[in-house]
Length: 263
Ligand code: ADP
Image 1: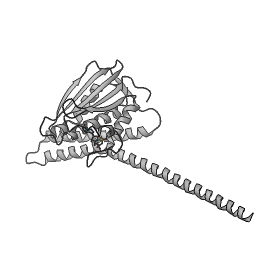
Image 2: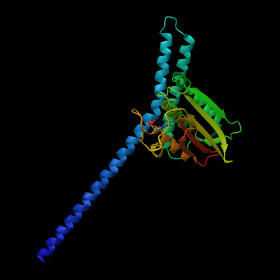
Image 3: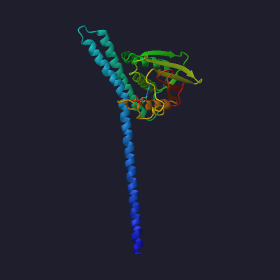
Image 4: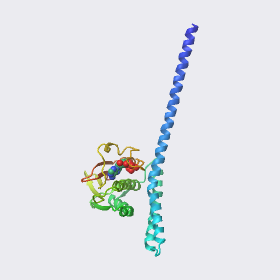
């Protein structure tokens, strides 16, 4: 009977040990996932805030350059300063909307014209496009119905898609660099926006991965832009996908319901 008790004790302590080991592993795993998501959040914030913030720096230094000349160009300097102020305001908007996306409850959805938002957003990227010698072709359908959505979030999506398009054309020398944006009513109840570029395009083997978080082919990329874009669009009841461009480059398709479900 002594042997029996001893064996039972050993078995029990083994079980206890196994349980302890399991729960420690679970705790570590939980901590790892928490750390991972903190990491992802931090990367997302720096990605989202980094874009308008670097526009502030660029515009402000452009302003200084216009003033720091033998014949300072006051008008150009003021233009650049205004662009810096706009980009600063945009940084705040982005921070507010990041806070709003963590807050529970409905986001600020308003009714607006996607065409107007496109025009406003490309105007923000005007300098950047001119600097990179990229031309723009707009084919916006006047019959497009308005949508109900969070305007700031949809603008983040557009800025991300346009910035990617610009970056994809950096190395292109042999053909015109062009971004084309087309809007059309879709399926009677949705609106569709197509953003095409004449850039490097997306290799077929990469196509299934580009919307994954942390997938990037850029040396300084975070791989978060498209995954954030898709999350935002799907939260609005829409869809976002990519296809090969008509000639060269890539096309991104953004489909949004004309009146979005509860946000
Ligand atoms: P990042 O821009 O930081 O790499 P994204 O999630 O925005 O992250 O994009 C993921 C990848 O998808 C990019 O690294 C690039 O390979 C590819 N990609 C995105 N947009 C385009 C585009 N317009 N043309 C070609 N490739 C693109």
